[in-house]
Image: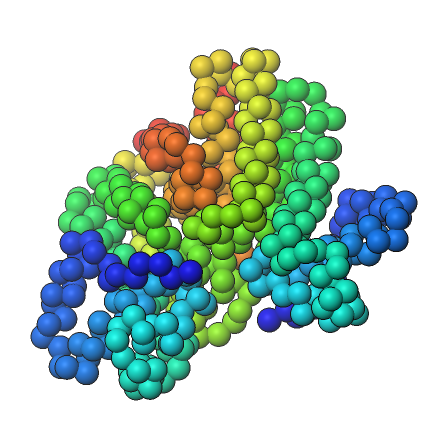
Length: 217
Length: 217
């Protein structure tokens, strides 16, 4: 049920699209199609993407869309990469401007929460994609897992730095802390989006405070 | 990609099926179809269920399957209810035999973890269903949300009792604690099933110990 399908509207997404104006026409068209496909996939899932529906949404023929992507799989991979690019620009990039250690970990969590909250009406491709592709080996699954692993790896490194800086206890296990933080984001998405429980955002934030207190140096 | 489709094989599922032997023939057939549909839905999702594939798997005609379920939606709801019945029998029932308070909360978490771990090869309908139906209003979504809410409600009551018994600090918020426990289960499922990260089970268990320490009386 693809209802309204509009390109992503966040300031960062707009800035990225603005930067694309320097692209050659073919690349520009491809980028525009990916934008629409991304908005569509957020609603109907990567597996819900159809070249036919997409062609209709961008006002092209099916073969016109196929000319830019050799296959539906290639389109799905392009969507995963674009999603990760926006995620990185919105969540990661502003946080690495903060000082190493706890300030950066706090910023990463806040940005991640904000990103997740903004998606409560549409859906997160990392979460829906994990359910769609957890037992479907192949290039789309690989692209998704690569993106999620890169992000979890970045978060784990930031936590490790906070331990090195003495902001979190030296003996703490960064993978354990990152697992607990990731857990809060997943619960926020599940309880707010599916269960529509009020107070989920405050619970996730309180959970993060609890983690920091427990591992605080 | 419905690969092997076999009825659920846990001891409890077998016991439940045993109990069904007292059913009238029509009811027995319906129960058998639901068993196969449940195993299928665990792999391909509720939305992946097809009356045609199911009919083939149970060796009946499509109209033979339709005779037991007026619609695909009715079949999906029957699957959700059967999943919840097994979940309740495996996770909830053995735990309520433990004393009120922390022993019961520990048993609920252990059983929930065991249930989730057993499903890492197939998939959890409460998790995949949430992604499939989070923006699809209707009777299937309602049945899913009802089941999940009943379970989260039961967990929250057990945590509240642990506060009343003085096993957890009196001022603690049972909804907050249950949110954090649910979070660990979701992260276990995500990181072990999709990311295939070793050590996820130990991290979830450590996260639970951390929660109890933080809220311990």
